[in-house]
Structure formats: C-alpha cells, structure tokens
Image (cartoon, rainbow, N blue to C red; front, side):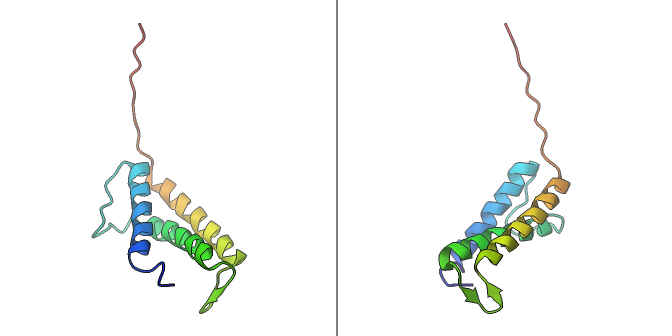
Length: 102
C-alpha cells in the first residue's frame, strides 16, 4: 500500500465503513474486537474504498501484482457489490415515526 494511504488514512477508510454499517443496521459494531458477523461486510466495503482511493492516488499504475487502472475500479465495484449484499443480510434498522395531524 502506498505510504500516502497506509496508517491513519487507511484506518480512517475502515472506520468510515464501520460507521456506515452501524448507521445502516442501528447496531454498535465498535472499533475493537469486531464481531465475526460484521467482518466480511467491513472487509469487502473497506477494500472497495481502498482500491478507489489507491486509483485516485496513482492513476493507471501497478503495484506488485495489482494493476491500479480501470481493472482496479472494476474490482472495487465487485467488492462493493459483495459488501452491500452482506450489509443487507445483516439487516436494516427499523424506525417508527408517529405523525399527528391537527
């Protein structure tokens, strides 16, 4: 991972995904000791965001065996799709709103 992304930036990406999961499910995921049921969703959505961020940083380049061009964006879309399906399986929070009319 490029040094511009490693460390704090990568943790920020993962933390934003974690908060997205919490917001969607209405449950507390927490930032340490993350329960196994949340991990696949967290990993896939984080990888998708990371691939997009790396692509923005490096454009059409390669790093080890990973090509960071259009194929990286296609891979990001695939990870995002799987992550969204896993998120849906976790369930969405329900809210009930009472509407009073006068």
